[in-house]
Length: 323
Image 1: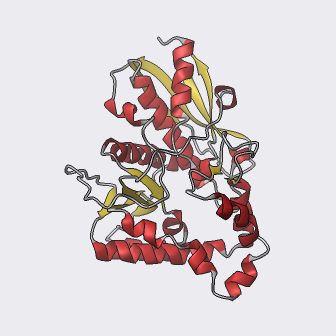
Image 2 (image 1 turned 90 degrees about the horizontal axis):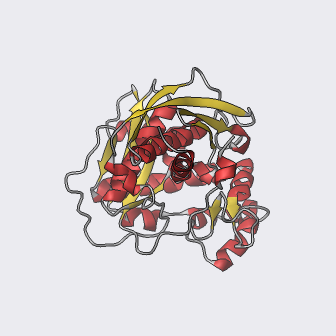
Image 3 (image 1 turned 180 degrees about the horizontal axis):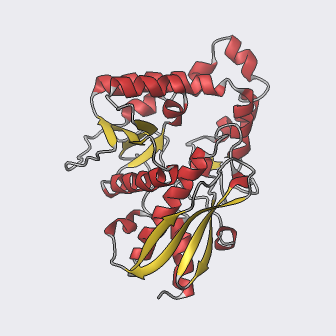
């Protein structure tokens, strides 16, 4: 139904999907009639994602990217999720889903796979035209009062999480603070993606390492971790929520589509993961913005028109993505 070289090209395009800390846990086994998606839990985050929920979301995004990439080849995919996969870090390769190829039609959203990117800096101050964009699974916060409140709570939650020494060490492990880092163009978060200057990158291991307790005691860490200026420059903050009982793989599929829809409007985004990861702010947001108890706040992401070019992508090679 599809030539192997075109199928491999689809795998590469699926690899453009976002993943937590750019871990890229999705792996593929291919044949001309179908494909199987696995999660490589060896590249998981034992501290930040001990249950593997973020890994499952990341694999869900890659799964949906694959479905869209296949559509560009005129191929559809019947998707069957695996029963009860365990995404906990260090659990080896876990089967996520099986895809059976069928006849299909092109879905125009695939064109945004190459255009979508994350943007940590400030956004353009010009008004953003949304052309009526809305989603039933995203509360779009557009008003100044709501965005200011979210900016303050994001800074608070980020600082609480960063006070965990083990989390800081894990975060540093996934940062590519030098262009000469052996995995700078492969995975993790490079300086360009983090909007980080050379001097700041040079000092980051000290600030997040041995100097942190001293700086925190002196009350200086809040200023170091604050992203309020960038948050307030975003004209849109999307509070992405899904059914609480839903598989995180399915939630990841929907999350990718939201990000691609935003890209089609000329927007880039930056996840404010602390808001959903910290139980206090997660609960506060659900209460303030009317997210029902049967829904899960999966992610808060600021969207806007970037003020610069897309940073270079760090992506694993085709050989790394295949099993």
